[in-house]
Amino acid sequence: MELLGMYPTWYDPTLGSGWVLGVIAVIHVLASHTSVGAALVFAWLATVAYRRQRPELLEYVRRYGVVLLVFSYVLGSITGPGIWFSATVASPRGISALIHSYVWVWATEWVFFVGEVVGIYALVYLANKVDQKTHLNLVRFFAIASWATMLIIVGILSFMMWPGQPAWYDQGGTLNGFYGPYTFGQVITRTAFMLMCAAVVGGIVASRIADADFRNEMARKLAVLGIVAAVVAFLGLQWTLGTLPEHAREVMAVRLPAWFVTSLWATFGGIIAYFALTFLVPRVLSPWLSVAAAVAVMVFGIWPEETARESMRKPWVAGQYVYSNQVIGRDVPALGVQSDLPALQARGMLASHPFVPEGLRQVTAANQAEAGHALALIYCSNCHNLGASGIRPLGNLTAGMDEAGLAGFISGALATGAMPHMPHMPMSDAEAGALAHFLKR
Image (cartoon, rainbow, N blue to C red; front, side, top):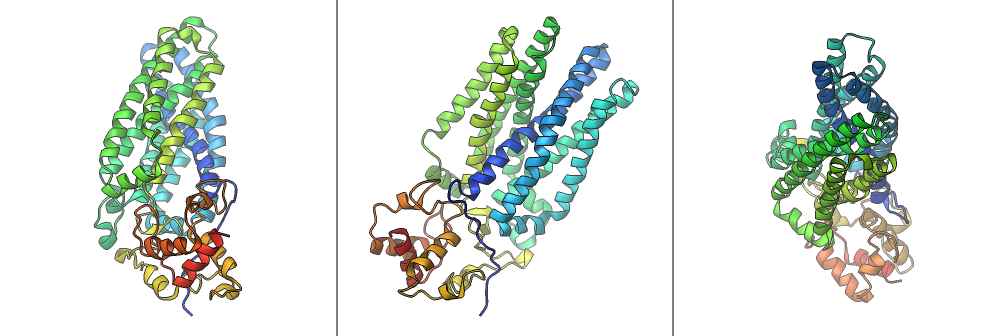
C-alpha cells in the first residue's frame, strides 16, 4: 500500500500548537526587532557623537548595547531555536518546504547573524579601546549585518505567505520566490517598526541617565524617532495590505474579528501618544513607564500583527502549496512535488497516513469514534481545539448541527475544498461519518 510522506501530529489540548509557537515567536520578534532597529540607531548616534565630539552619546550607545546583549541576544538566542523546534514538530512539511527551497539563503542569514553577534560584542567591549574610525566602522558593520538578517528573513516570511512571482511554481528560483509587491511593503513596514521598537526599549536605557539635561535630550530624540517610525510603519502597513491577493482578503474577513482594524488604529494612536508625552514632558520618562510601553508594543502591536499575518495565509502554511495540516495541496513542477489530493481522494486519509494504527485504516462500527478522533487530529488540530474549549474549539463550531448534517457538511464543503479559509480535505463517506460521530459524541 502506498503511503504519503506525512509525519506524526503534535496536539496541545490547551493552547494548540499554533499558539505555543506564537507565544515564543512574539517574544523573539520583540527581541530581534529591537536589535535591528537599535543597530541602525547606534550607527546614527555614533556618527553624530564622533562628528560633534559628544562622548555621552557613545556612552549611551555602549549602555544600550549591554541591554541588547542581555535582552535581544540572550533571550533571542533562546527563543530563536524555540521557534525552530516548535515549528518543526508543529509543521514538519512546512519547514521542509522552506529548507528545501532556501537552505543556502538561510545559511547566508546565519552568516550575517554571526556578524551581528561579533558586532555587538565589539561595539560594547572595544568602546574607548580602539581609535574612533575603527569603532565607528564596527558600529556600521553591526548595523549592516543586522538589517541584512531582517531583509533575508522577510523574503522567507513573504514566501511562506505566497511566492513573490507565480512563475516560481514552474520555474523555481530564489528571486521568483522572494520578491513580489508584498515583500517590499514588508521591508518598509518592518524596518520602521524595528526603529519604533528600538525607540521604546531605548527609553528604558535613557530613563536611567543621571544627567537630567542629557536624559531629557535623549527622551526627545527617541520620541521624534518613535513618532516618525510609527507613522511610516502605519503607511507601510497600508501599502502592504493593498498588495494582498483576493483570497487573502477573504480569509481575513472570515478569520479576523470585527474589532481588529479599530484595535490597530488604537495601538498606533497609543504609541504616538506615548512618544508625544515623552517629547513634551521628558521628565515623565521612567524605567517603569518605558518597560510598560515595551510590553504594550509586544501585546498590542506585535501579537496582533503576527496573528493577522498567520491568519491571512491560511489555509496554507508555506508557499501556497503545503496546507496547515501538512497535506500538499498542489503540484510544484519546479521542485518535483506532487499534490497529495488525488491519493487522498482515491484511498482516504486513514489508509494513506503512515502513522495511523493498522486497526484504524478502515472505518468500522467498532472503531468509528476512534477513527474520527484520528481524522480530527490529522486534519483539524493544527488550527482547532478538538473539544469545547481552548483555541477555536470544534465543539462550538459544530454545535448547531446534528451528526447526519455534520457528516453531509464534511463530505460536501470540506471534502471538496469549497471553503477558502479551510484546507481541501478529501474523505470517503465512511471517514466523514466517523469524523462527525467523534465531534458529536
